[in-house]
Length: 146
Image (cartoon, rainbow, N blue to C red; front, side, top):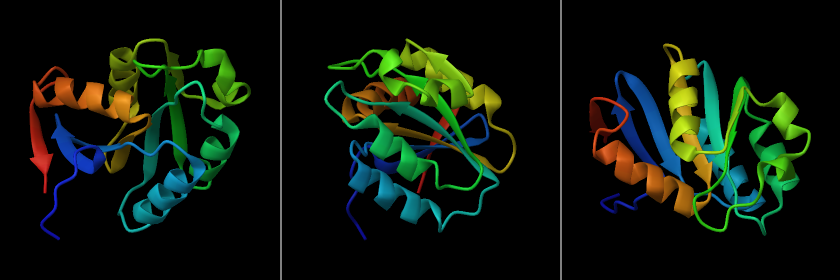
């Protein structure tokens, strides 16, 4: 209960919106994330997803798609990221697609309304990179969620 593990369901409030960083990078991790999100009181979840080029995208996305009210925002991960075309038909289902992760998070934050979560997931490189910017206040006034 005392352990703090960066980018493993690490939460921040940014300008009144709840954002969680969860570096799940395979289908098993996505399934665990889905289970955890079942405990949250929320209307929908805006997933910002970026996966490495060697990851099984369909398996990962199918797990996330089981979340009621899931909305997808897709981006490239900053290190060893695959091309966005690898998302295939998931691109067509996405609320937004951005080559740049900062733009991807800004899109997800702008789309999230009251009672909606933003969850950054996929690559730990993605979550770590965005964590640095979040902590610096790049996306607005930020405070940790304990």
